[in-house]
Figure 1: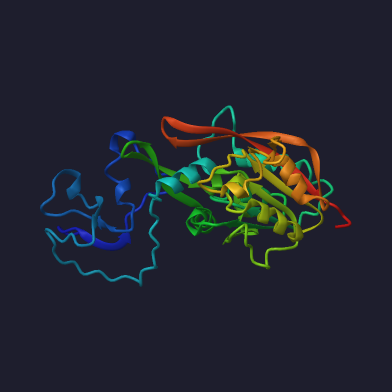
Figure 2: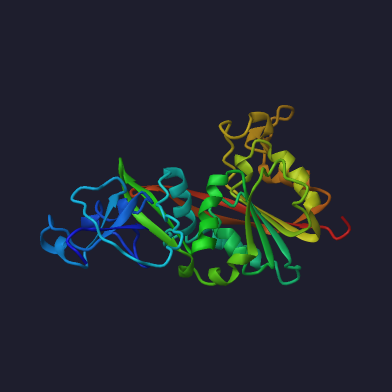
Length: 333
């Protein structure tokens, strides 16, 4: 090591298990963005530990102050892929909802849904499953513990980037909103979730529209739509078209809090949550689902309430309860 910094082509990053100290949150982690490279060794202008040969700091690539020359021979460098923090607040909340610390009272919504599904799998062929509205992918990984192949589809390409990265690298970083403009650095590791590393390659994450799926999405033993129905622009069309994509004897599992809103679904497309114009009677979403799915599908067992807990920031969260129903396609259909 000479008396100038050694400028490297390696982006700065944390070692496995790196955690941000709350009293030191504005030094290292902000440079894990693929725009800061590693500086090594001491410099004549440095003092203290900056001057020792083992010093290790990061600067943007245009930083050339106090530069000098050093000649180094080495083998060709391997290509590096920046491991940046996901900064989109909405996506960070999705990742937190799927993989973050769960509320002690409610537990993981996605795990609870798949645990409920597992009760019906004893006599079901477990070849192919479809997870619609998969978002950050927790339910898809859980389903892969039971099914040979899981296709996880979401309308948003950005939403499935996190689980795809988990598959490829084993981790996903994100900036979780704390309060105002403050945030915390968080990291999800696939290895922290039991069985996920072993089944991850059974899952394929894909972009698609649940109301207008490609013809290739067919032949499923199970279709799961978790907290999806009341966010679709045409939920009735979704139910009509999904019926033919499930094999005889297969299952359709729906979980929804039935939060009908014109922000997501035109009023005339709601499946429930209003009074019938002709009779004035309340229209139940579950009754509408049963009407659309009949006669091909029959509901198994009474509905089950699955609570969920979504953090908005450090001190705010949305609580809700989804109704989970399991529908079996008649063997003669």
